[in-house]
Length: 264
Image (tube, rainbow, N blue to C red):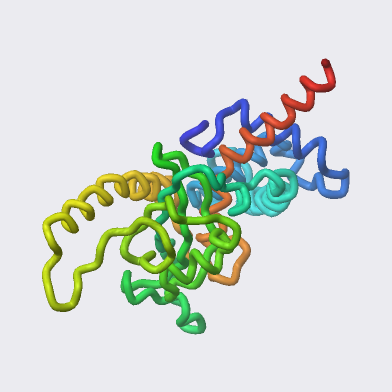
């Protein structure tokens, strides 16, 4: 179940309990033939794996329109019950040293959206900023920004630097000028000195952690190539899907803490 939905069976049950508890009767419009649990599983599978709805219908022995109704009913409820637990830039710990890098989430080349084209990657997509700890723990993913934008612009636009001092953050050469630790750029009229090359090598040995984090993130998400203005665009769906496991864990932790306080 985890490799299909990104959540364990126990976490899916927690999500179902939150939906049942925190929504009113008018919102509980998932298909009766599927019920809440299967509707949640189908929606999570669709969000995380981009499964074709007809395939999901065959798997659960229902029609494609039934699968579509389940996804349409459950997706906004996931946003509603988990919105308060989604990590934001404000949740980043100012005492923690972070690694940051940007990545492009590809999408179809829409003629009316030239701003999606990334000259660096020579394709269209949305830029997201990914922040992780030195241990490789995913800490935060920014909202998607047009693919043509540079990493520095995207990070500043995200608001992450508004309240945090990035002096201990580590980034690549694309973040030079933001006050964080970055490799040294080659000057125009000379080669790098020996100590500068050693410094860059040391930085790159640290930065592999964020590159691995992004690789794992992108391996778990299959871009759908939907319209960039859609609420279910690849970038937004990717961010929701990859963060969901941590979000559910945070929600459960809060619930358990509340129960413990009540019992005491």
